[in-house]
Length: 297
Image (cartoon, rainbow, N blue to C red):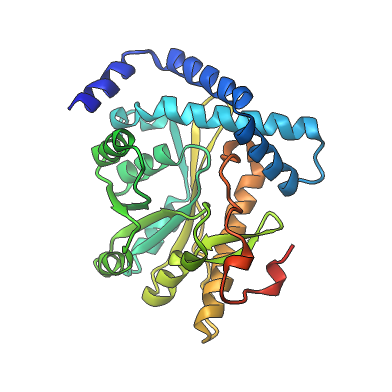
């Protein structure tokens, strides 16, 4: 209860002032935290070797500010509805989503921590129907409780990704939509090493396994911030799932295809992805099995 009250008190601060405060904090954190700033700059230099250092630093700082805006706007999400949604979100590709739902096998949506994925989730739930959001439980009980409450405010169900394979398969059989973000580092035993910005990144294999097992259609969904503050939620066409008969190879190939789509989206607006995340933390030498040599930098 106290946590909910705290969120309501914060919302009393006008959004424009709230953004000003979080952006100021984001900028301060960028300058004060040398370790995290260097992680972001290093990641960007490896991802965009053609860019000069000044541009790299600008993108890194903008990435912090983008995440600060997400934090400021998050409290507004429970107050978005079908009548005022148009003020903050434009949706493109709903026909792709409707077609996928029509197959009757459930739907697998994937994206990344890009733009404002939380507002995108709310917009889709309000416009179409609520769905299940697969996620990692946060370390902070305060954030975990309040973020879960906000997601539930527009009908979405938050489901921990731990041991979620069987429950998700059952949900897909019932026609549910499962949404997941697959752009973060995972342990070697939870993923496959695929090419991401020219470096081998350990990426969750869960999406590929689910797609291969259930034959549910897989669609990308990204929520990009537009000039002026509005967002564009874009749902792409169904991604072709490769089946060669070799399960391990199929998982690797499809995971690479999903990751390539995420990389292409980030390249359009790199400042809207959180580069401070240690995406390449898990090293290929930690894996027990060999992956595609093509993904080697």
